[in-house]
Structures are given as structure tokens and as C-alpha cells.
Length: 395
Image 1: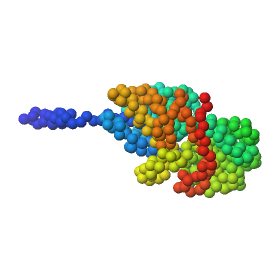
Image 2: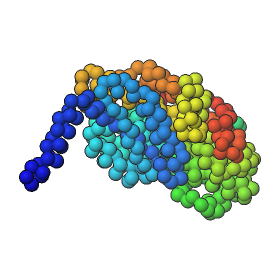
Image 3: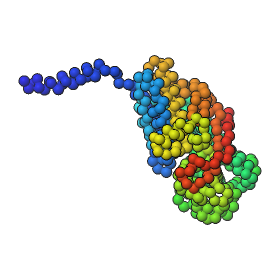
Image 4: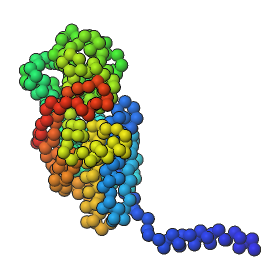
């Protein structure tokens, strides 16, 4: 009798498995990973890169669902740190369910992390990484739907020259992104006859007294900063407090509403604050009205820069996975997804049609010069667009 009692639970378990087998098979899981800073000073932009990808997966996974797959987001916090990004990348490539990566925000994190993606044949579609090395390595797995720093830096210098400025002091944050774009700005500025009075890098984020002393003595008409908003906005605010009235000019690393939270009305004083960017406000793109409305409804705020691009990156990944799955008639291999991304032609992104060249750059990319028009972070998306350009990448 005791033996029968002990066997009874096992019999029930087997019966449960049989009954479970009579139902529809569980869908196979496909994951799209994101890597961006979800904590720290750059988390506002990094979180919305994740959110943009999440919205695309929720809205556009229908075709893969019909094929019997369940698509999940796998978000990773790279903290804007290369070591963290690489550690995350190792975890990502170790998960066979991950068939694509959307990210990063920082080129200095993307470049070493994408070495892992490349080794694993895992496609990486970037919404924001602008350093030329991202695509100049010739990796088939690496693509971006934004412009490049060798163009963006030159665009900034051309803007300064168009305003009649004759002198500049150039700073950068010593990262692959910040130093790279500052060097491109300096090179083009000098070619256009702008005298560069100083060029230096700094990792300082709180007290810029020692850096500002030689700048204020040199009296440049513009201070150019290559790097991120959480450093540049502090520098700019402190320079205004010391009486500097010239122009501030930066790059798309400055494009975050938290820049206004830090700098406030100091960004409007003197000759004002401008920045170049490869990502205009989401509202400037003709296909983003629904995205903006849906984003605000789901996440409760206006999308930060690169959120719309992250939506498009995830949409491209979904379409490529679908194409590869249909061709293979099974869960596709990572290499097949990689090839399907490059094969897409005139993909209808909400930020515009997407066509990649053989390096993974857009055939033509948009560049904007934007003027900060309010010290209120809530008004950041209403900043004035001074120039819009569409430029092919260097060959």
C-alpha cells in the first residue's frame, strides 16, 4: 500500500506531461538584445534607446508570431562603460536565442563590444554610434542608421564658419567618440580659416576652473566640446558664470534634455548654444507622428534622441529575422540574419528609407544643426533646427 502511495505523484506527473503534449507546442523564443546606459548620467537617452526598441518589438512582431515564434526584448545596461559593454556582449552571444543587437549609445563602448558580435556572427544595428571605426573595420555584422563623425565634425566647423567666427577653443572628453569628432572639427575649422587657439582633452566633470582659465584668456569666439552632455553642460554653465559670452558648439552627445536640466538658462546667454546631431527631434521625421504618440502613451514622456532610430533598428532586425526564417523554413542562423539585414532595400523606417552600403553605413545620412532655445528640459524637443543636411559617407 505504501508503495502505491509513493508512485501516485509520479503517475500524475507523467499524465500531466502527456496532457501538455496534446496542446499547441510552445512558441520558439527569439530575443533581440539592446545595449545602452540604463543607469548613470547618460541613462535618460540610454533608457529611451531601449524603450524605442521595445515599442518596435511589441508592435511589429506579428509576422514572426504567425510563424510560431515569440519575440522578447533582452535589455542590457552597458553603463556607458567599455568593460561593462564587453562583459554584456559575451553574455549576449552566449545566448543562442539572441539573433540581433540594437545599440550602443557610446562609440567607445560599441567598438570593443562589437568585436564579440563579429566573432559570433551576430548582427548589430546601431541607432547612435558615429565614430568612423564602427563601420570602417568592414564587419558584415555591424550597421548603423545614423551619420558619421568625420562628416558631423566637419558640419560643425562649416556652421561656425558660416556664422563668421574666426577663432575656436576645442575640448574633448578623451573617449573614442569625443576626441574623434573634436579632431574632425579642428581639421575642418583650420581649413576654413578658423584659428584654433587650443586643443585638449579632459575627464573632469565637476570643477573646470583650471581648464577655463586659459580659455578665457584666449578669448575664443566659440568653445567646441566633443563629448557628452553631462560634462559639456557643466563646463558651459561654469564658463558663463565666469563671464564668457561667446558661442557654445557641441555634437550629438549634447543632445539630451538633461543638458538643459544641468545648464538651464546659461545655455541661452551670450551667443547661445548650438550642437550638431545625426538625430533630429523625432517630430521632424515625416513617419514618426504615430511613434511619438504611442511612445508618450506608453512611457509617459517625449522620446529622447535616438529613440526613433532604436525603433527603426529593431524593426530592421525583425524584418531580417522574418526573411531569414521564411527562407530557412526554421529558426534562422545568425549569419543568415546578418545577410538579410544588408540585403534590405528601401526599408520603410519611421525616420526615412534605409539602405546600407557595403560598409554598413547609410547610403545618405541626415545631419542637423540645432540651437538650444529653452532652459526647460521639458521643452528640449522644441529646440530650433538651424540647418538640415543630407550627406553621403566618405568612400
